[in-house]
Image 1 (cartoon, one colour):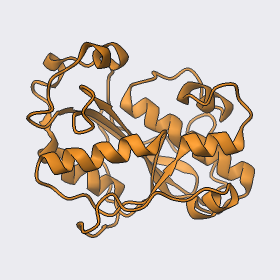
Image 2: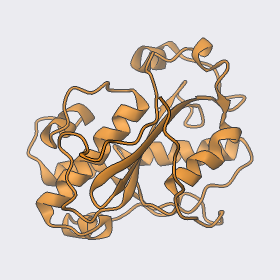
Image 3: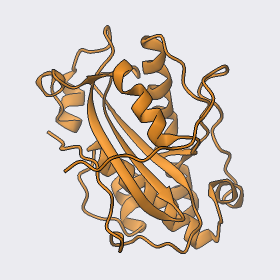
Image 4: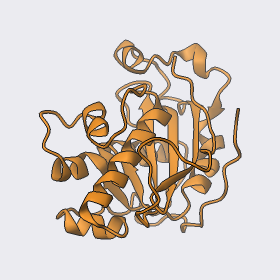
Length: 225
């Protein structure tokens, strides 16, 4: 089963990181229990400030009622089983923490349409509203930046200098997404995610909900051993 954790990197950062890109965003990745986009069972979050990872967090989630059946196909992908989330936080109880971590950031994900849809559908399934996040797809960014035979997350992350991570661990995947955007911005000479999208001929994804809770600044995430 993937081990999700939260930490703050050391002052020196980790390999492949650099502070030479004034780039701010939050990378996000969900794992789901089944084919329903509302069936979130794990989330990983990575906060980037000035092109450096400054905080990470990840946790297991009890999928919303009615979307909580674990299908074997999904279990084979991420290794999360019903017993792993039996004592995990419910979607509705962790939603404020998730939103507080992201704050008003643009959300970055690999195949962002999937992850932003999970965010919206799981909120809807529990009677909630999503903040009006904008998003940037690291898959699209990678296709515009690298010449690869495959743009799957492991291959794109390797091109960005981030190798040998636990693919389908939500936190590890979010960290890989972050590195793709950091590296691509450096190569493109982009000062922020909006400029990066413009330089690559991409558009940021729009709001995940038409009338939603206003965005608030990100708040610190406590380290977890």
